[in-house]
Length: 286
Image (cartoon, rainbow, N blue to C red; front, side, top):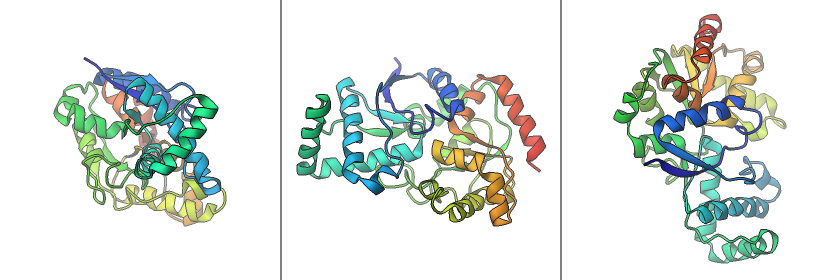
């Protein structure tokens, strides 16, 4: 029987990160996971909406929780930022009955929904490790990823309750999955450090230096490839790496892909893209 989850793609996967939208569906289908779209769900806020209006973000996310609750499903997302923010807001609403009642009043008036607190939020990484298991995952591999791979988590998901049973301060779920997919995991000191996504437009130099720190460490530790479980961070680490190198003076040239791409490639999907990735590694990975 497939495992059913309400699917929240995160802030980037359904818009600018087409590679995530393309790869997540065949990857989870192979894994026996059925994703039910949360049609009309809004952004989690990305750490930005709350800076202007905390209650608005809580209300928007409460609406998403109510939608999942109507389906009787837990929420799953491939984005660590989205998972972390949704978990934080879910915890806030559960712990404050008065606030939950006030926001439910707004939901009832505006969209006819209400949220009781029954759903959960999980990242796809944690579902794979805790529900499917590493042994079963390794049996599904058709294209072993024979590369040295550094994993990036980001800070938002690394909090008690949000990262499943993984260690909050020294996570290893991603490294374990990389190994199960045939790769050689490279553990980074900066794997949970922010790359400054919310401040990229206002404090660009600082954000780019944070980005460079992650990229250059992966490079110096001998990684062929950097894999991110966060779609927002993935975009910054990939698109801004040349600029980050110029600002920091560090070597930041390393291919960056998202976690769902690694899963899909290893399971035999998008073989042409996997070949292109290996070419990219040989060209810019020096």
